[in-house]
Length: 137
Image 1 (cartoon, helix red, strand yellow):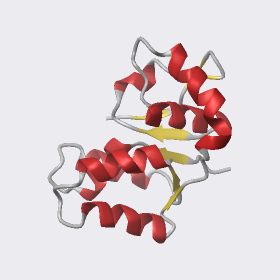
Image 2 (cartoon, rainbow, N blue to C red):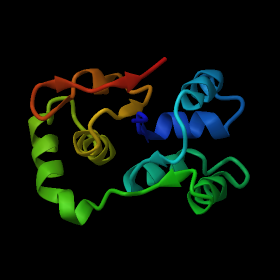
Image 3 (tube, rainbow, N blue to C red):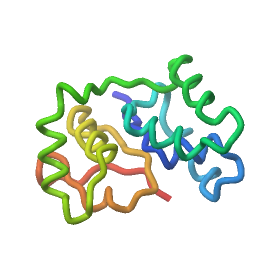
């Protein structure tokens, strides 16, 4: 069984932005898994915002989605109660909507790995107590 990669905005931006400090880390981390990489709309929104100054930045993200390199299997409308519970639980961090969606996805896809550079994921737990498998710099 392959380990499903779940992609946060940071590595997505870093892979597309060659001058990003974490570009080489992101390229290496992404090469450890096979596409498609799962993500959610909140992550794509963050990444598009962060790449807004890069010519064709948001378009490149949409191309990755169009080509099937990225997939969005997550539906917030279906998962809103659990996402809201996570955001309440980690309100002191605070947990963003995108982070809560990714944690919920890690619960749904047992054995998955979240590719991120956000240290808050070291605090978050799936199913209440289990550490999340992470790929971090």
